[in-house]
Length: 183
Ligand SMILES: CC(C)(COP(=O)(O)OP(=O)(O)OC[C@H]1O[C@@H](n2cnc3c(N)ncnc32)[C@H](O)[C@@H]1OP(=O)(O)O)[C@@H](O)C(=O)NCCC(=O)NCCS
Image (cartoon, rainbow, N blue to C red):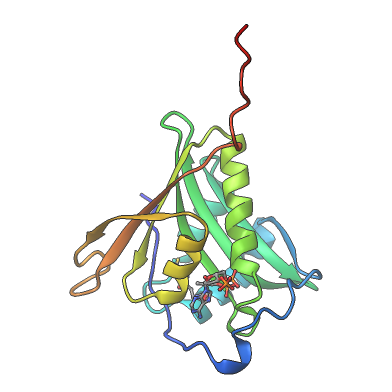
């Protein structure tokens, strides 16, 4: 069973990087391939603690047909990644992980990755997307709230003793339904 992680290395929002600088147009977001595995593992090591995904788990996200792995690449360097899983039958998806290299944060990259994951899941028939996030992970919680995820519940000790998680959820769809004119 693939599980999402919500652990992070704490960091603060400094006065110098609060404002958006640019959306980094040189960074391309694309589907990950097995060639990206070393880069994704480096990113995992930098962004998460001991709870980071194992190589086999990341491999599963890349190769399985009920998962999506995306990378954000700047001149062949992986600067961000997102992984999600979905069930077409249930119309449900789950964001398992989003991470951006420390020096590339607060420039809209996680937003791009999240939006792209949602778009791809919508095409596949996913209508509801959930995730778990550590209750102290303010940057990630803010990211998800900004993108319309709502808090459903708190799961105590989800990541281990006293490491609680919020379960969040969002309805995703192709956009406003077209009105059918009844004459
Ligand atoms: C969480 C994370 C992915 C955000 O990446 P990012 O590229 O910096 O995010 P974005 O620039 O797209 O920010 C989008 C929104 O997220 C929120 N956000 C991002 N960083 C934030 C911070 N340091 N403090 C508060 N809110 C923050 C804001 O709402 C922001 O919107 P705004 O710029 O309009 O205020 C990144 O901090 C990270 O990789 N953290 C470590 C890994 C992790 O914890 N991942 C999530 C759990 S799976």
